[in-house]
Length: 374
Image (cartoon, rainbow, N blue to C red):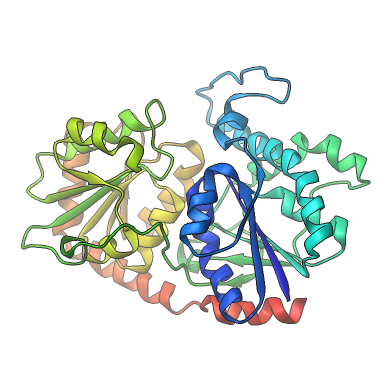
């Protein structure tokens, strides 16, 4: 069977699909991953075959309209969430014809798309094969889908479609206890942390006696894009009596190291997380899910409006604390981190959530469902 995976937007969107794509390849199926140029190294690093269908980064789609007009920034949370849908809708429109050309040559039997890769749904409908939609985080607000459909209306109408086609199968990677109650009904799959691998050093898989705290703002951190946010997090947590590890892309590691004054670099989070006592981060889905499966308390400071609801669900479960932007004073952050490190109830709830996450079906089991679907 030939399975085409479609993703894009950041390396994190590749990492989310890697376990299922790898399971499919290991089962003897032919696998291609179609994405944009900024994720090609992540695909190659996973040992998967990648096909570039666009050289335009998602940041361009976020900041620029189709006609080249800059998209004005907004402080309105609803406008910002809708802007994500419009950006991924623009990315889907750009993917559409290159994907069709690829499919005409390679002829996939199934198309698997990440949460916001709307072009996967359109492609599957055009070539008449099942479409599987896999979540790549702990929940996207429904308003994002609505905005994407509005953005793609010209392409959809030209194809005689009255909307973005529904998936044949929905795969959710979030543990049910903290899942979005409005998420589609489908099947569950265990989240398996993946990332590009540097050379592993002993300190990455073993730690000393001090509590270890990992801090990150995600894979897209760059000057002018959450760089100052990450530096601010590190400075506010510097007074903690703990070992601080800061995970950031290599392109900003040197500059960030000078600003943060602690160990900084591209960390193999799948390895390092197992040694951590606390994760402090931007509430990104991949980082949060990694903390869930490893049973680690988390301090979430959402840097985008769409990340607030998943953060609040995790905090309500009792395995995390959520501090909203504006409330993230040095005292508030340091106090919350100290609370998470010392109060046993957070660790107990984090371990309970990990037990639930680890009981979810592994990718090979989910692949069996896809095989039957095809």
